[in-house]
Image (cartoon, rainbow over all chains, first blue to last red; front, side):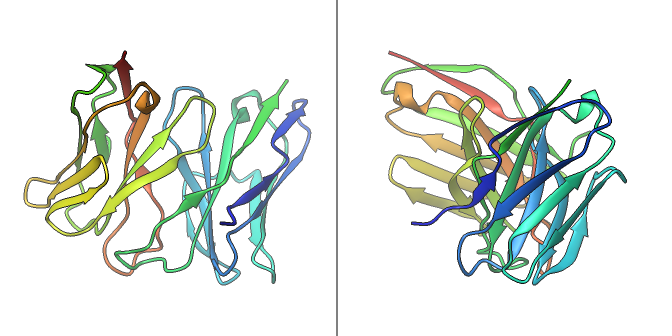
Length: 115
Length: 113
């Protein structure tokens, strides 16, 4: 079965640079979620999109922005990168947000290292 | 206090034993509860979800939910060394929520041969 695709898998950037992470949800999934997981931490919700509209926002810095496109893929844009942005970034997708049976499936993640 | 609490462990059990993982949550309106398994450096993998009080079984895994006590657990029967991982408990919001998940800090399980 098709899974969530994320690219790139690894990314190394310098401080103050920008980065763009991409997420391709499971086919027919219309909802995308972004999570950030620092070393030894649990995943923290950043932002979500449903039918190409932002549906919720968590602890996402103002330096970050995201959008969902007409083909339902999503991109997370990160500017003025800081050392503390080094983390695993996961994208997850689902197709029935708000229902008791809704389940999120996670992509393999992008490991961002800021030097 | 975190919204979702788990004992970070490590929880160590011998191969073939039952591993019991526990989780409490603070929002009484939470609708659904999830258990994810995460190997180091990998993405969370959905093990089970539950939204009704009682037990739900899937193979070697049983999820238990008690909404009155705001408590959810995961039992792993016949534990195998390959079950050694971090188990994340996650909770979403009330009916009609946006679907975002709130995670606990995870419990590290070690299954010793």
